[in-house]
Image 1 (cartoon, rainbow, N blue to C red):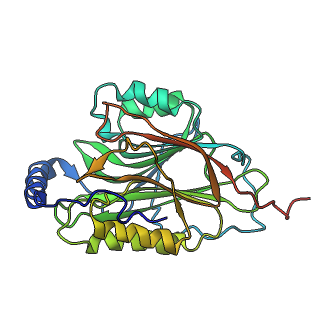
Image 2 (image 1 turned 120 degrees about the vertical axis):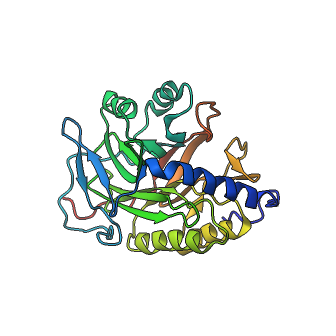
Image 3 (image 1 turned 45 degrees about the vertical axis):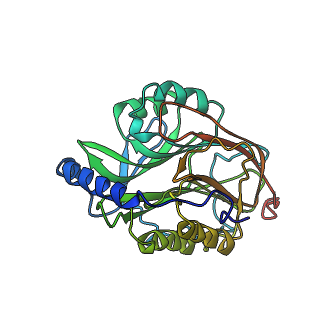
Length: 308
């Protein structure tokens, strides 16, 4: 399934003014912003202190399943893997905490974009007793912000990618986690994406998604990619379509839209492989400029023949 030509044609007449506003905003805020020189992968295990690592996927790319690897103690159920994806708008919207607690209930994995590593979010994650990783894009007024994956079980591998917006100079990030699934020979790879937004062309956007494709090609098993893709033009959508085709992915269909749009097109997506969607829903909220999406999958299972 492709995205191209599925929606109303995009009118870009106002794009130069929006780009000018974005650049002006950046000039004002950069004095309060710190961008780390290297990847900053922040991780927390349940009942363990926060730790940091250089988790660059280009250096430590997730390889395909290793048949003889030691299986983790915690595994996802192949019959039900419930996921929430949400750009939480840096937690600036009124009531986002209550929306987060309500919508994350019963979910195995949470995928967040524009997640601020402040006390409020950390307390919510701790309250739900979750493992989590954050790939920090930048630090604004002392608070790190990026993409975050939280889960009820501990991932046995994580890595991140970071690409800089060419006009405003602030990075966008990607985070990839690996999970074991009970009874499966293959691990599940889950990636959350915050796509590069303001550009005059698509060079930087294409480079970001091509690099993601190159990393994920090394994985042969089931795969889920979700997030805020910022594919608000036909050319950007064509880049996402290439990723879908190159990785043999399916795109989650939405009959009743409700997803957040930019220039008339939805920008939040779920792509998957080796999984079967059982149910999905878009949740209208006023606490963010993006409506969260929840999806329940089950594994199209290949039994683990290495176990007795």
